[in-house]
Length: 234
Image 1: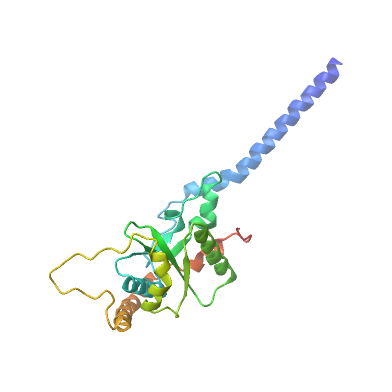
Image 2: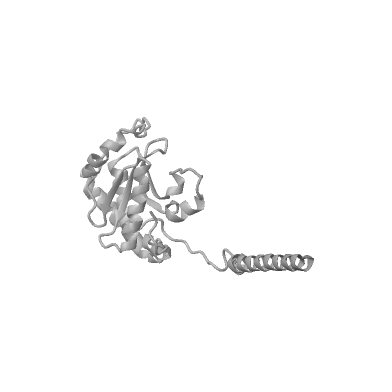
């Protein structure tokens, strides 16, 4: 009996040692080499940075349109969701960032306290399936947070009057526009007349400046679609 019990104990110890060794090998194979490679890469030398514009031409047009149509309101461009949307951390926050938190809203209309009143999503008329899923996921999160998303199509932007009408319901929720500082000079009208001609002239000037320095175009949003998991996130 002692011999049998001793043999059984030896087998159990050997099996436990083999299982532990297998676990360590798999763990090292999963994390070790990859982590070593990541730590060996230099943030600047291995990813040489270059300056790029924040907005595309159509996004710049939309930005100026909002500023002219809604004087006194704060307009922000390309803001990551993680900057203005909070989520509970009972699940992995890193997972949420990978799914949607790193995505950016094209344009935000905010009140004087930087509270988001409306989100403008400038979308291309020709979208890939992945790009469409990304926009839909972005809109789903924002709607769940109580924010209205207005979709503008490139090349089909509304007029300033249409912007004010479409966003009227959103603006009443805020603290109102910034009040102009009183001066002794003649006040400027809230919306210059004729507003569209002046806006077009300003945008044309900006487009010419961009054409003269075309090497710094912004990273397109669709660039990151190729890095998404093939399985669509809910």
